[in-house]
Length: 322
Image (cartoon, rainbow, N blue to C red; front, side, top):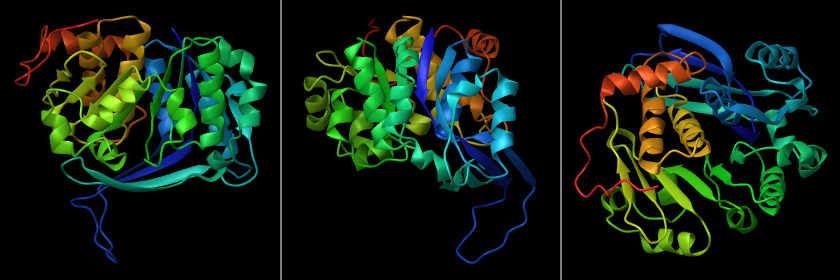
């Protein structure tokens, strides 16, 4: 199982607070962590922890954090060939996490925004060796468009997590096989209101249009309501959320997408894949910070075994389907 990630890297700083701050307010923090992050790196590292072989492209700046990034990649076993240096600052972000695990954050993407189509073309042979090509919207459109076009010409599936959300480039969408969004992002993309998607017994008109246009799978995460998957010609498939005590939700969506990727690459049935993805997201919320919270394959298997064969489905759950 090999995935190629058009990635982003961010030095991620998180502060634990009793509640999220208001404008102009200074709060006491009870804990602080600075760790490797960014949606692209989180996706790649979470998949790596699940046993997926990872390659990709990540932009690093020319500042004092550049050696930190290189040391991090060496530490986790990623090749330095995955790093592309561009002028400017390495990506960095700050998150506030409240007592319930909810967060607000700001990210300066820096050198990540300089990743270019030329970088992808230089790595075209490596893209072609993958079983799946993935990207998030912390990377610019140009390298995603190039990588997805290369993938599709080679018959490889592509997965896009368009977060943070922006308008979808039609060329990228045309080459996307799997789209993973949360309910708010789905609404921003015009796919339907969150409540309507959560309750849907069939694809909304906008979702149906995407599926008719060639998208193979749309997965919408619904927070505490789990997730719902749409495919052409079959009823939606629902996955309930696992009940855990959330400490920090940063990285949970990335972990979900990584679990989904791993399940699809292993050719598991979709219901088992969604269950695995939901478990990855739930496990990631159980500790402060994301880097050390992403589950290993062994931790995931133990959690799923303890949870039992399946959770009680929401009303209207579709039959299991491959």
